[in-house]
Length: 347
Image 1 (spheres, helix red, strand yellow):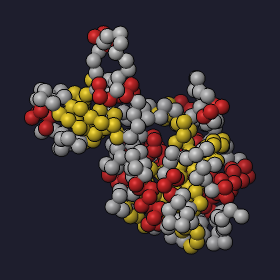
Image 2 (tube, rainbow, N blue to C red):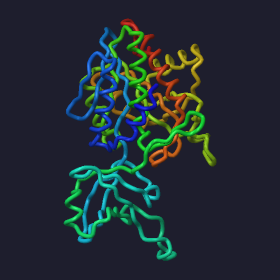
Image 3 (cartoon, rainbow, N blue to C red):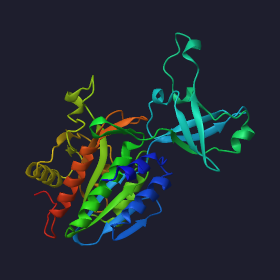
C-alpha cells in the first residue's frame, strides 16, 4: 500500500462538489492496473475490471467537508457557510486554504477574543466567525476570491507511531483509497465478477454521486467503505456507540440497509482468514453512501465496511493503516468468492 499516494490524496483539497483535484489523482493511480477509467457528470470516478456476473461496485466517497464564501465586507473580511457538518468550535483559529481565482489563498478564521467576551456570550457558531486573508478592502479580496469560492482547513497528513496517521479529509478519502487498494489486489488475482471501484462525489451534502453511480453501473452487490467513530478514547460510550478500536480491524455493519447475505459472507471470510474485525449496528440508517445505493433500480445487496476513525470532522482525524490493509483484503476476498450463481435474495 502506497503511503505516498495516500498522502497526496489526503492533501489535495476537494470539498463536496469541488472534488476535481483528489479525483484526478485517484484516476491516475487506478490507470496503472484497471481495465477502464471513466468519470461522469456528477464527478464520480470509476476504475473497472472486466469480468462476468455478478456486477459488484466498491464505493468510497472522495469529497470532504469544507467552507464556501458567502459574503465579503467593505474591509475584506469574509463570511462563509459550512459545506457538510461542522462543529464551529473546531474551526476557531484554524488556517484555511481557499481555492482562489488564480491559485490557493491562505487565510485564518477569526472570532471575538475570549478576553473581550461577556459572561453571557456562549460558544461560537459559524455566524460568529470570519475568514481574514490579510487584505484591507473588498476590492483587494475580490481580486483573489469571489462569493462561491470554496476552501478547506490547511492541514496536511502526518505519520504517528503504531502505523497511525492524522490528517483532514480522512473522512472519506480513506474509503476511496481502500476500495482502490481492494481493486489493485483483484487485478493481481482476477475474480469471475465484473467489479468497479468508484470514488463518489458529494456524500457529505447530497449523496448525489452514490445515486448516479449505482444507477449507471447497475450492480448486483456493493461494498461501501467509510469511516466510523472509534470508541477507544476517554469518555467513549461503547454501550451506545458500539466497539471500534484503532488497530482492531475493519468494522462490519449490521442491520439497516445492509444485506444479511453480504453481512454473513463478510463475517465468514474474516473468521476463516483470521482478519480482525468488530461489528457495529445501524439501527435505522448507515449515514453512508449505502443509504442511496441499496434501493437503486430494483435493489442492491449492500454491505458497509468501515475504518475506525478518531476525531471525525476535524483537521486531525486519526486512523491506523493496518485497519485499511485488513479492509482491502476482506473486500477483495469477498469479491473473489462470488460466482455467477451467487444468490443475494434472502430466502
